[in-house]
Amino acid sequence: MTYNLKALEAHNKYRKLHQAGPLVLEDEIRMEAQKMAEKLSSNGDKINEVLSSDGFLDTGGCGYSVATLKDQRKLHETDFATNSWYSNVKFYNHYHPGHNEISKSFVRMVWKDTKVVGFGISGRYIVARYCKIGEAKLFPDYSKNVLEFNTCKEN
Image (cartoon, rainbow, N blue to C red; front, side, top):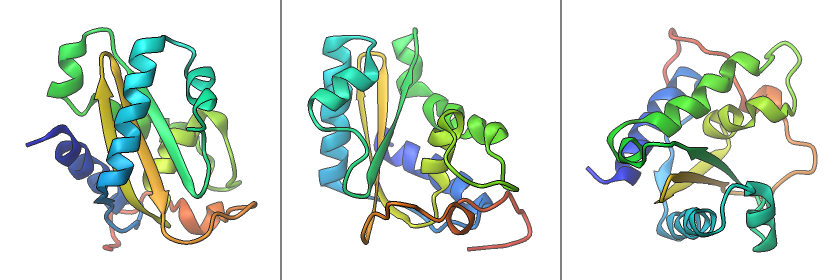
């Protein structure tokens, strides 16, 4: 199973827990994620500086998450990145929904309106690029897009 398929499967498992529909892989988004990962791998640890210099930051209804690991072999062998991003659920407050810098990778993963994703991997970096169909809003509705964990409901 390719890394993109494995990461997609892991993402959709977590999304289902939050009543968000499954993501689909899109080749153009995957290529963007791969380009981002390669740029990070060749330029080092200043993630926002590296990505903003090429216009990769959250634009046009798309966002990204980045994971790094010292042991590069584990990037391909595990769901390290997906589990790491999801673990930030503990920092998200469903009673006062809204932007939170610490939980943004969790939010991007389970955002209900997100429809497509692609993953890139290079060196010790994994990048998830998330995009949604429709227009990006200046003030997104967190309460409708980041739903609480609920094992009773199905998509």
